[in-house]
Structure formats: C-alpha cells, structure tokens
Length: 238
Image 1 (cartoon, rainbow, N blue to C red):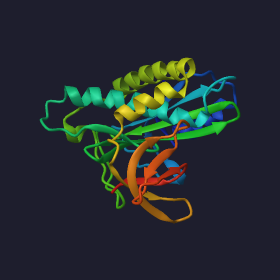
Image 2: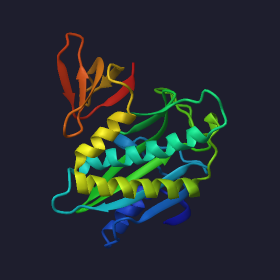
Image 3: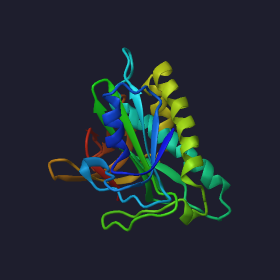
Image 4: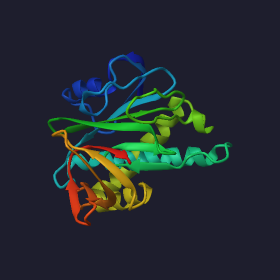
C-alpha cells in the first residue's frame, strides 16, 4: 500500500495509474484529499484523521458484473467497522448496517461511502470512512467511529480493509456475486425498513426494503404491495 500526505483524489490518481498498467491489488491511501468526491460528483470532505483510499481490480473473463464490486467493498468495510465497534468500550454504540447502493451506516447515520470508476479493464474502488471526524450535512445524518468510542488510526484501518477486500474479491470470483449478495443482505438493514427513494429523473417514491435482485438492484415494496426494482437512485431511511 502506498501512502501520500496529500492529493486531490485517490480515485483520480489510481485511474491515471491504471492506464500505465499497474497491477490488481495495489492500494493508494492519502492522509488528506483536496478534491475528494463521492457519487454523482458530490464533494467528499477529507480532513486528516479519516480514511481515504482506493484500490484497483483488473477484470477477467468470467468475472461477475463490474458494478457488483461495490458490494464486495461494502461487505469488507462493514465487517471491519462491526469488529471495531464490538471492541469499543462505549455502551450502546450504534450497529453497523449497509444501505443500498453503497453507504455504511452506524446508528442510522452515514459513516462511509464507496465510489466505483472504470478505465478499460480496470475498476477503481474508492472508500472514504469517517474515523476521527464527520461533516455536518444538510440532507443526511453523519457519524464517525470516534463518536462511538472506536478509535483507530487510518493506517491499521487500511490494512484491515485491504485484507477483507482481498478475501471477498476472491469469493466474488470463485463463488460468484450470489455469495457476496447473501452476506450483504445479512449486513443490511432489515427487510421491511421504510425507505425514501429519489430517482435520477427527480421523482421520489417511498416503500419498504425487500432485498436485492440477483444483479444487485434494489427491490422496493410499494404501498399497494407490488415490488419495484430500482437500478439507480439516492436512498434514505424514511
């Protein structure tokens, strides 16, 4: 793993390195980002003390859909955070839960996010996790590991995450997306959780979480009882 004191975006850097032939499994971590970003071009506030890192996967013939690598990263990330929360001395700390498509929540507040970007046969998987600090956002609650008494520096967190990601990547390749999907559902909020979904066309719909389809799309149970499959949206706990 390579660590730099500061960069614009670890994802942007790794996309550039991908075109130079860098091998799968390489991780780049920054102590601070000046142009960190999340989904849909949103800014990702990146002060020192949190984790900002990206890794690269080289797609092979027979691999599951590249888009499902976000679930691989989410499962690995959630397992690390859950372990750290279990070690916390703070009573009643929040539980780590996954929310579609790529958020990790603790106690219902966002702790981290995942961003996938592709260059030819390379998929860059970026992870931002609030370890020591969290921003105050207008549209959603946020939190950090430190807020729950789980103190860990970015370097050992990075090592734990890299190990977990490699393990789940191997299962993704060896067993297919189904194995990852099963574990993701184990770690997600329960079926029946009320969700508010903001669609790309600006429409909004509410319903109950009813799992994932075989390709990883969100299944939303509408008020009349019929299922609706969501392929792209912003999702909030209602």
